[in-house]
Image 1 (cartoon, one colour):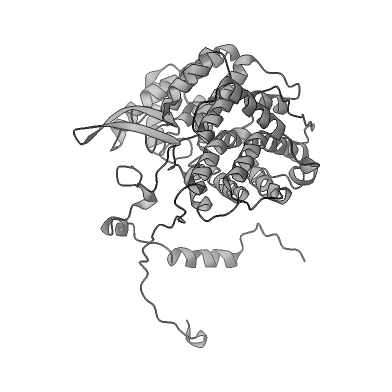
Image 2: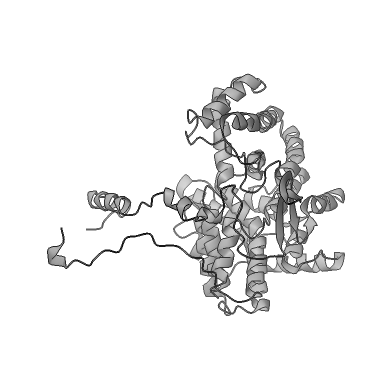
Length: 454
């Protein structure tokens, strides 16, 4: 008789109680033993674990030995991200591909180098024969991040040099994955909709003349149609999510796994598993759902008092999921502002006008303005609180008509660039496996023979 492995049995419940009873460490020990829980100090600053030239996040100025909070800055290879965005948007160009070139190779491309880079990416946007039918369409998952991770691991079997970790080979693998992530994500979503939601199945082939963001919209929509503003804002979203320093959870995962000398597919699959978490890549979905709940309970979206009352209820665990959080507000590093959110905001406003959703945008803007005040009144905080990139990204994706199932994969489509750059840097580094210390606080216990155990 077959067994339903998804059922929690009484036996497992009993074991769970034992697991909890015997696995809970006294939180006071972390302070007593000066353990940097989560590799962060009490103020939330990360413990220095390595060096990188790829990305830098700045949230304070050092003045006379004192850390003074400043407007947030994000640098890609030493270049201010806002300057990069200003450069390609002022020329009405797409920017994700040149950002990928910069992060991977360390310098901005010339016009000729960018054209060559785009040509290579276009050539790599091709999955192995029957891969969609035999891999993606078989047992489609309801979570696209799992589909993406499984597809990445399966690509290992199609690579004759999968275990070669020489820099030329890893760079080749990285470029292929950057090119293929949009296909794997969109095809995975369409397969799931076909098998589980009885929707029509359509598989468009990517077009070599299109940018990454254009191809995503082309692949996803049945009629392949999109406006220039839609494609440019999606491109901007990819640029803003491409890199965020070596300390974020998924990038650190990439470096930890890469330091063991394993293959590219295993390292990237591990990063995908990290990004899937709602505390990391899944955060913008929480923001969207929080706002959906807010719209039901706040009648006047321009009434500061009504909005503030709802935000206060969130903090007091009386609204939405009763977590005590205002999703999209605050960041582990930034205090006064997240530069990604700041850049996004102007473009989001333009998109809201094109889509006739200015009222919704205004609600977001009102919450962004009021939430830091409410949080400061209600909570003891070590640094300022501001909107992070997740605050606006979910709204952008919703206005673009993108399904929620693809929100986190879109993050991965962008961040695969940063992961790849950090993997290459790790392999070029000093070659030590990353191995932090954990202090064991269990008491020494004698072994008891089986017959004498109670």
